[in-house]
Length: 638
Image (cartoon, rainbow, N blue to C red):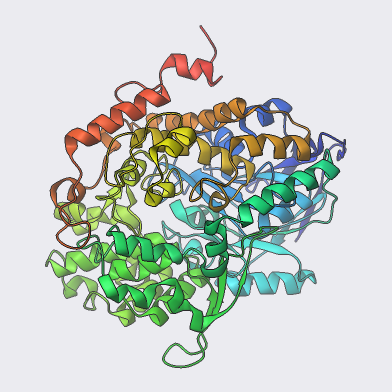
């Protein structure tokens, strides 16, 4: 039987306090209960929204003993403070303890779902417990309805969305859902919305599946009131013009993120065959952005975004005829392509779409496949275990393994355990899974770009480029400009160590703020010095919500979020020893290509780490000092 729940309290549209009208829904699935509550102003002032409030909520129940697949692990959806507002805000964070790493789990997702949640009057969902049977949530304006999902169980992520819209009679409903991978508790399964958008990293789909929650469907048509609409529009249009005139956004709108593949290949920081090589030279043309154009049927954007960076594609002939979808992103091309020695673009498109439909993270899927392919190459595992030969570049094998992983069949059942499969493959296998904090390295190799290397090592969700990667480092900007951005000397040499700790510290804080606002990283200084940052954020917040924050105060909020994340990792026993890189990075110089000879120096890396900890106000073991925690208001002063 379906169950309906109404908002408790009055829904508020006070001018200048628009954002305060957004509520949080507390759902206890084992009790079939829903409670709608306001979000305290103090919590907004300290954490804003999105990733910020999500981390506060997770911290309330986080412990080393919390089983990620238990009913006690909270699943938290959080729209950013600016999500749903004209211009830049469309992102939502989904957070829990990670089944993939066993530590902090968090993933950021674009599309239209976050904005629709805001239009329905909510900005956060805190979901606890486990339903007795498969369900989905339907949120419409001031109501939350729990509906039976047994007929949806087993469907892929595209069909699930289609059938929910049919059942509810509204094509404008936005759905976030899991596929078979999430249902089968694959540790790196994703939550999906639309044709491609995914909360892909850290296994949030498995958390959703563990709760018997198939989907969250949202429809809203409540007004979103701006504090100062006239001046907001003026300021937005000025900011938009400046942004759209940047070369980065123009290129992004034409090619999407695959344009980054060319840079990584040409400079020598691409993962080839599980990072045994770092470039494929002229072979890279087959996987660069221009190679997608014959399959592209257009470009589109997330809600309200001025940069249309997402491809729609269709394969009209050949072996993969009939394959249609969105993407692939640069990360998918690298992870399911070059990292596996696979240079067949049509196979990569097919593999990406298969992952999307099953609800698998393409980055982790590619990383684990690369791991076992190298184990097979070296004779550490054999066909007696794998059942099929795991040869580099074999597209047929790649697709077969994706099916097996999502369905937990055959050898795929072992791979579905992700990094935890190390205990299955034996001690010697550990050196070939390039992971950090039990979370796999992505589609790049960081032995050349030292800033990228430090960012991977220190990320609060394990190896992750979206926590701090300073893509600006690729551009070789003059040190004068870098000093203006980062507030201190930073070397303009991509392979240098000097100043790169400052870069990573700065981007960690800045990206935490972006995620709390719901602001896409690609529209910030992630890749362009002309893009919005603290000053622009301060004005956008004031004109849209009426809340006043100086740029300095916004930096403190970003630092508060990141430090709170670090405190949760410290609870898990993570300190300096875990802020490191795979053995290959320190011991194996890149053998050929433009980055030949590059390797990470233990001494130089330790120097970067010392400087990084100092900037954060953490001790030599990476533990936040009491003085810093008091300053950020994370603990009471003595």
